[in-house]
Structure formats: structure tokens, C-alpha cells
Image (cartoon, rainbow, N blue to C red; front, side):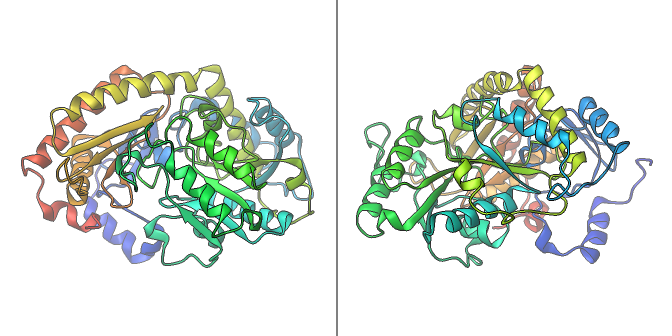
Amino acid sequence: MSGDFPDLFSLLERERKVTGSTVYIRFYPMIIKRMEGVYVWDVKDRRYLDFNASWAVANVGHSHPRVIEKVSDQLKKFISASYTTFPYVEAIEYVERIRGVSSVSEGKKAVFGHSGSDINDGVYKLLLLVTGRERMVSFIGAYHGQTLGSYSVSGHKAQAMLSPYKEVIKVPYPYCYRCLWGLRYPGCNLKCVKYIEYLLDTVYPGDTFAGVFVEPVQSDGGDVVPPPDFHRKLFQVIKKYDLAYVMDEVKVGFGRTGKFFASDTFGVKPDIITMGKPMASGFPLSMALMREDIADKYEGTHLFTLSPNPVSIAAAHATLDVILDNDLADNAASMGDYLLRSLKEVMANHDLIGDVRGKGLILGIELVMDRESKAPASAETAKAVYRMWELGLLTAYTGMHSNVIELTPPLIINREHVDEAVNLIDKAIDDVEHGRVPDEKVRMFAGW
């Protein structure tokens, strides 16, 4: 295939004629041709440095040779086997390996799925069945998936139009930059946790709740990093009422926060850990590791004909090999620290940046109209992301006001990649601040 293609907008017009808009969110006019390592090429053979990693999927980089080799070997054996009736050794071995990675996974049993959405949905369903309780706690700004159940435990405004299960109580996440009570950590004494405890003591009896769904770092809500003791304190509170602690690691697990499991990063041992996006380097696979009493309570209540697919399991084995053999969690921690420090230096030169934050290699740059009011700079964020694409850097924006630039690069990046990305981010924000990015270039892709 040559690089001789018509205008990208023409190709996107062709796509719109055959694909429903319900399946996509776009930030710039781009159509992928090839991906390798930390780079992406479009159909015009232009190369981009990827600091999105397909929404934190490509933790080991795109098209890793070990993943390709393992998948190719599996394709020669068998492509599909319905694990529901016909188990195979590779899947059993994979769960055994994952259980041995950390104390937070030790002793837990696996339930499989295809995606983060359906595994979170399955956990919701199983907890209601097992506990006989009807309520659940989740967080404002949370994103747990696209099925009816995972929509219901999500708290992002983009999903408010369809949240059918009303017995989910949404509480504030510890968004310290925009604290609901106007307090500062640690002087706040984690009022957000005390608020949850108060609700469970008074308005909503704690013994009517099955569990709490929580993200270690809230990604779609704006790449919000909680205070270091938040999860430990919350865990103590919910255990007073015998609720299950569900840690959604679908996006931030597998090394991204600096530990293999983000649960380890924050010092808790959840009852259930859900995982998905990066575990098979993009092949459809998800899994929940959960307490035995939950996993074994009912037979056949969460199963799929094609999950776990043996090709996905092969990719998952190879992905795990690469992460562990190359200490990618440690690299995420060190490169994340370096990237965060570099972004804070950039922040000093741009009034448009209100906050930079991150844990490992999930980081957010929050843009505001001014630092005093913290009014979200949504249009400017869309322009900055678009301009980064023009300059050769792939990012996206998140947040309840679409004003947070999210950075989730592959965990294989080095200092040279960080330096290049930071220079392009600096340049893009400067161009936005000085009016060099016209509205009309971005408006069709923005949500303002």
C-alpha cells in the first residue's frame, strides 16, 4: 500500500457514510496505517510519537515482536475454543501466573470477559446475586464501561443519559485541584471519605450496599490522582459494612502506575480487581480476580462462548513476559516522575495550565482560563490536542469539562521520547495562547 492517498477529510467522509457516530470520539483527522513501538504512521506515511497508546492499551508498545510470535504460534494450533465447556492449558497457566505476580492477586479466582465494560458489568451482577443487597457506591467522574451495568456504576456526565440502575449512589472522588469542600490535603483529613462514611451511617444504611466501584486513578474524569492514603482509608470505612472493594484497573493496571497492579501502588488488597485494555496488547480479553466465595457462589452466571479466546491468551502471556522481563513498571515509575517534573517546568511558562498531575505513566494537564477561578478552558484544550497532532504527537483530552490533556504513552518510552513530547506540548500550548490555532480547524472535532 503506497502513501498516495486523497485528503484525510475525504477518507473520513467515506467512513461517516458507513459507520455510525455512536462508535467513535475523534480529536483530529487521522487514519492509521501502521503502528510499531512508540510510533504510529497514518495513511500518508507521516510518523507520530504516540502518547496515547490507544487509550492505554499498548503498554508494551505497538506490535511487539514477542506478542506477534506468540500469537502466530497459537494460530497454528487452534484459533477458538469455548472455554465455558472446553478448557485449555494456556488459560489455566495464565491465571496461575497472574495470581503469583502480587499479594493483591494471590488466592483469587478468575472470571473472564472480552472487555473492561463487560467484566465490570459482570462484577456488578455477581455482587448483587451473591450479597442479596441492592445498592452500590461509585464515584462522580468515574468511567467503568459501555454496557448497561457498567454505565450505571459510571459517573461521567457523558453517560448520564443512560444509567438504568438507580440504586447506585455517586459520591465525590478526591479531586484535590477542585475539592468540593474547598479544602486542602492533608489538612482536609480526607473529608471525601468521611462523607461516604456519614452516608452509610445515616441516609443509606451500609448493610444495603453490595460494594464500591473505584478507580485507583480516575482517568476519564480528568486523570485525577487521589491522595496517597485515600484508598486505604476508604477500604477501612467500607469494610465496617462488609462491602466488597472493587478496584477497576482496566486502564491503569499492568505496570502503568509504577507497580504491576495499581492496588499495590496505593497499598490496598481489593476483594475484586478488574483488568482489560493492556493485558493482551489489544486482543479482546478482560478478567476479574475475585474472592473465592464470590467467584464460586453460582455456576454459569457470567460466561461467554468466545472468552477467553486462545489467541488473546497467547497475546496476554507474551505481554506479561515483556512487562516482567523488562521491568516496565519500574520504567513507568521513573519515566513518569521525569515527565511530571518536565511538565511542571512547562507549566511555569503558561498561564493556561492550571495543574499537572500523574502517577507513573498516566498524567493529566488541566487547562483553565485563569488560575484564580479555575474556569475550564475546554476549547483551548481541544485546540492544543489538535495542534499536538499537527506537530506529530498523539494525545487526547478527558475530564468532566473536556479540559484535561491525557498522557498515557507506552511503558517502553525513554527520556528522549519524553523530551520530544514535552517540547511539542510546550509548542502547542504556546500556539494556542497566541491565537495560532483557528477555531475552524478544530470545531468539527471538538465538543465545545
